[in-house]
Image (cartoon, rainbow, N blue to C red; front, side, top):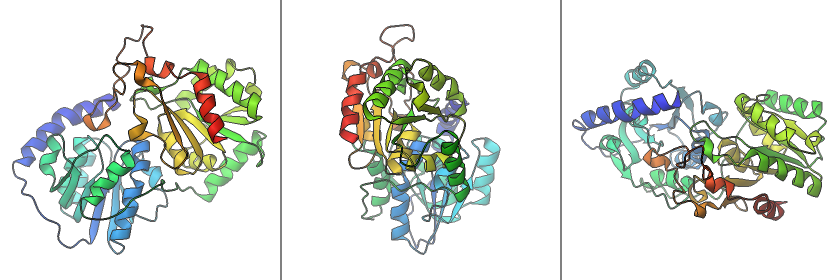
Length: 377
């Protein structure tokens, strides 16, 4: 499904952006009473753009600020005080066209927070009187304010650059907290109690999976098994594995290789996204791949250790003082091969059946991770 969306967006989206760009005349911002922020895809990127949303709220405290999202990332905005309304679309032509017609030039200002997608530019173009976006790709022809995507800094700062283009002076040294309901808290409390986890237990969250767009970001599961055994022995901790339902078997495979699996819990598919926000607040430490759960942990103020290879922690490391993005991809001629702003999210560029497959991730040893854990515990 992901590949289909990206394929259609690339070819049909480019065509539409080029065509509509012929008729676009740049327009300066007038009075700002209504703003829409477009962020349609990744959970991680959505979390990283929240400081930019906060900056807009502080600059325009009386303006109506809406967000356009999808079912995939909508929970990130739950009970967020920096927006007034959350609009949802599906990434299909009918839903997109319906949104465009219903919201034609309804907003004084539109921010396209997507790094690459064309559909976000099209939605911004039809909804906004003035549009701010990144200065690459065919979609740039639809923007009034164009911002260079700086891939030598953290994505939090790159999202803030879109806001700064309007002379809004704002910075952030940490992520915005993610919210959850009382029912979510009760569900998590019950889950932990049923698994004999006490409030004073040193609970470590481990997320060994990764989004379907780039599974090569996953550290080998046998290394996770060895690491977790070492952490349990050294620090007398308990470990909760988190993941989507499809990662249940992966986590079971890790547990089966462990000597101390009785000190672990498999939460894959047992809790939803907002409940995961709550669960993270119960943990003292997070260890995982470059993925959404890593950014959730950082947002919730947990000491966070992210493992990187295909992607760069300079851009997408766990944001916040003291958090660590462990990267040893210098042994790979391709790393970092993920460049989201260029639409480059490949599987490992080495053949799957070769010894070099996931070379950059395999270069991270268990001892490497344990050394970083010592700094955080």
